[in-house]
Picture 1 (spheres, rainbow, N blue to C red):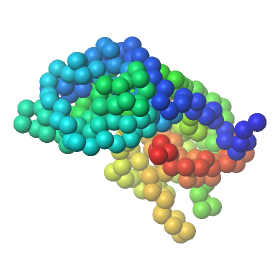
Picture 2 (tube, rainbow, N blue to C red):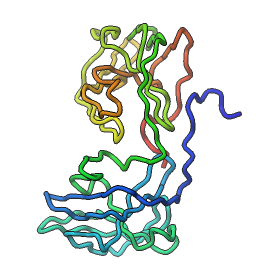
Picture 3 (cartoon, rainbow, N blue to C red):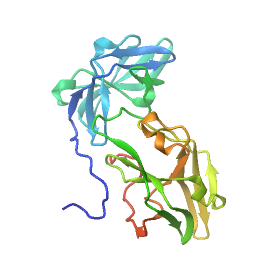
Length: 262
């Protein structure tokens, strides 16, 4: 038996695991296609999700400039490079895997995600990081009642919800806005993106007599097709609130939400 306070399956992909990417992958800078490949590989640098490894022969535009620095990434040693596209230079944009990394990716290029302006799988944009082929995301309507409290104040009391199950993360409980106590909440400018759900449309914080709790609630007004059941609903971070499901107080998950351990 595992830790009974953990209510979701753990991630099981080992660091250094490599698999072929069956999708066409492209990366763009300033409107220029830097690479276009059907031969990419996934490599896991931590168990949550992989990175793309691009064969250098599939670079379409741009020049990799050796920065003269070798470091160790999650899956092994790699040599850092900058990327020149036209007159623009993206410092430290890429790493080329060296001997000591998994054999199947040695010599391939691992681009830093934010060094490129746009990533595409086939013709669809990808946000934040590659989607893991081992991650499943299901948004299921549920008759479970959900009550949310913080510092002794009821922030939501809903007779039903949509439960979102995502591999390796706590279950998220998406609530109809009609059952959330909006006058107690403060809208913020925070925006986050998820490769599986899309871009958030709003975040809210809560100021109580006991303290300030930033960005504890979010919503997706226009999620991905795969998660359409959460459209227009909002969810609280289990990590930051007291969450009762069918009258039972759930243990708060540990760790920082959505951040890989590194």
